[in-house]
Image 1 (cartoon, rainbow, N blue to C red):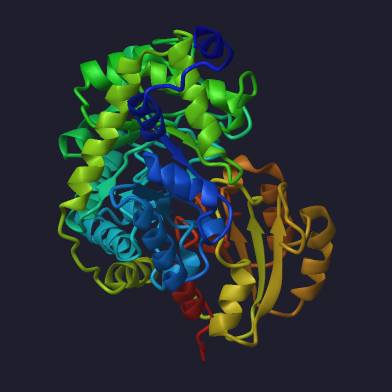
Image 2: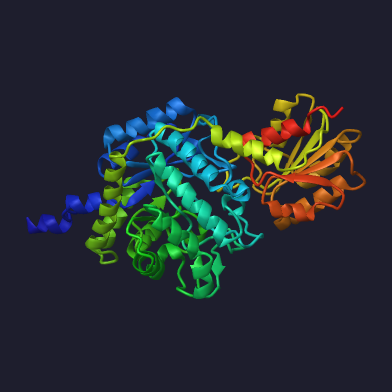
Length: 506
C-alpha cells in the first residue's frame, strides 16, 4: 500500500479543495455556462464574473444565472458595471447607467444614489448580486489613460461623497457594491492593462487623497473592495494586488476592512508580464486577497483550484489563509441570499441626468442635417462601447444627419477609420453643412487635438464641439467655437444632446 501511495499521492482533503475553489472568481466565453464552469460551481467556486461576451439579452442572462445557481444556490455572480461607456449589460438594459463623472459634475448625491439603485436593481432582476463598482479613484491626473470618466471627479471630496451615495444606492437594491481600485488608480500615466503603473507619492498624500474615498465607502458598509495593479513605493515594491503590506497591513488592519478583498483581473499585463496567472493567483491570496480574479474567457477553474491546492502542499500558502479567504466569500454569499431585492426606478434617474445635462448648457440649433465627426479613443478592455459612435446616435434622432467615427489604436475591423486616413474625407464631406465634432479625452491624445484644430479651422457659426470624455477637454476647444460637455458616453445623455443640436432653429 505504501508503494502505491508513493506512486499515486493521496488527493487533498475535500475541505482544502473546496476552500481553494471558494477563493477564486473566474470568467468564461459564451452565453451559456460551459460544463467545466458548472462543475467548478458545484465544487465550491467562489464567484463567476460576466462580461459583454456573456450577454445577448435579458432573458438569456436570467437563464444563465439561473443555470449557475442550479449547480449551487450561493455562488456569487458579479459584473463590472460602472456606467457611461463601461456597460457590459447593454443588450439587456434599456436604461444604461450614467457615467460616474457626469454624476460628479451634476453633484447631486441623491441623483447618484438613485442612479446606483436603479442600475443595481436591474442587475438583481437578472440574477446578478455583486456590482463591481463604484470606481472611487480620484482622477487627479488628466493624462490618466484608463480611469477618465469612470471616476466621479478630480478631488477626494467629490469622489468620496458620490462614492458613498453610490454604495448606498446599490445596497438599497439588495446587492453588494465594490469600491475600487485600492489604494487608488487616479494619479497614473500608465495603463495597468498593458504595463505596471507606479505611484511615488508620500503616505501623507496618499492618505489625504487616494484613501479618503475608501475609508468613507468602507464606513458606509461596502462589503467588497477591489485591489489595483499599481506599485505604491511608499508602502512596497510589489503591486498592491500582490502586497501583504497593502492588502493585509493597510486595508485589513489599518483601515479595518473585514469584508471580501477581490483582485482586479490577474491576466492584465501589470501582473502577468513577469509571472503566470496561476502564480499571481497564489501570490494575491497569500497577500490577503479573498478572491483571485481570472476574468479571461479561457480560464480553467479546475487547473486554478489545483494550483492553489499545490501551493498549500509546497508551503507557498497556508491552508489557514485559504480557508479564511473562502470563509469570507461564503459569509458574503450567505448574506446576499437573505436580502430583499428592491425594484428599480424604471430609468427615471438616467432620464433626469440627460435632462439636466442639456438644461445646464447653451446648445445651439444646427438643424436636422449636420455632419458628425466622432474623434474617439481606441477600443479597450476597460470600456465596451455599446454603439458604433456619435453618427449612429445622431442618425437615430435626425435621419438627415450622417458622419464618420475616427478612432485611435486598438481599432477593430469595421469600427471606424484611422484618423490619418479619414480626416481629409471628413473635411470634404462636411463642406457646406453644419459640423459637430465630438472629442473624448483629447487633452491626453495628440492626434485628436490636431484633428480638432484642423476640423474647426475657418469655421465658427456652423460648428459645435461636444466633449464626450473628461470635461477638461473644453479648455482646448479653439477660441470662439461653441461647445458642451457630456462627461461620458451614455446613450440616453447623448441622444438628448443630439435632439437639442438638431432641432430647427428657424
